[in-house]
Length: 165
Image 1 (cartoon, rainbow, N blue to C red):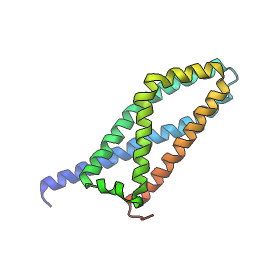
Image 2 (tube, rainbow, N blue to C red):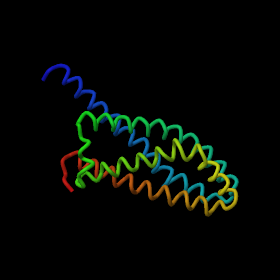
Image 3 (cartoon, helix red, strand yellow):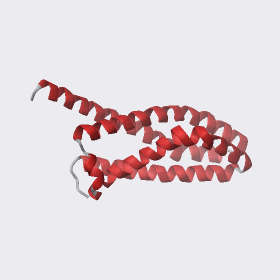
Image 4 (cartoon, one colour):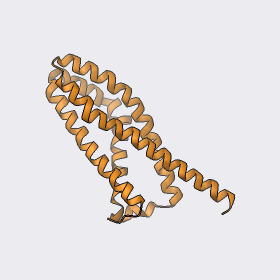
């Protein structure tokens, strides 16, 4: 194997490692927020403290999520290009790639567009009006996104190792 091809393959391996590490940090963070943080915050009796604590902790996670989502998207794009795997989007057997891309697009839209433009203010306003209802909605959305994310991870691991669904 010539040196250029080997270096290129090394970059692909590095991109895959970065991609998987990014997914672990990103979806692991979503799992923590969904399964630990939101239930604990909902159990707090004082609604104003719920909102204050959630915004403080979520603000820190949002920074990590933005960086990791960006890195995960770029590394995924690099792998798609390296493998010249664009045509996989035309085949249902690669449904997990469609789902991964969809989930990435949803999170990217929320983190980079919707949250800064209006979602953060909307959430704050809604939580001051009816804390319980707002946190219940947020937790439901997180559960849906976490479930879809875990299905994508499961499908991607199986599919990347040759399993045909």
